[in-house]
Length: 82
Image (cartoon, rainbow, N blue to C red; front, side, top):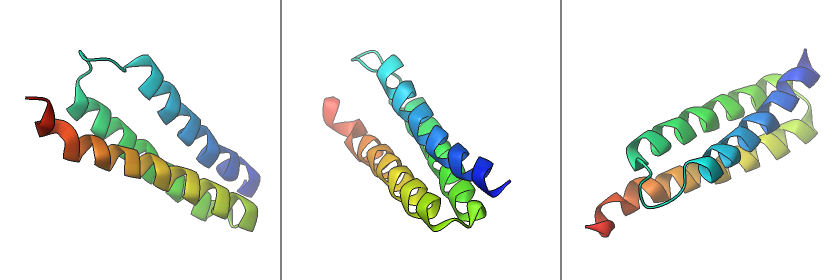
């Protein structure tokens, strides 16, 4: 079970990257993208911590914090387009 949650933490990062690549562009709804990336990031960190394997904790937390940082940048940059 520890290994599965470790892999799930990496899969949530990959799902977030795939979501950004699919929904990118000027017509993308940034509030929805921000929410989805935040939820995926929180789930990824939770899966990484539940794995209790140091490799998956370091890898999963760092990848998902990058995803959370990107969601934060999206949230900050919402008003600049107008």
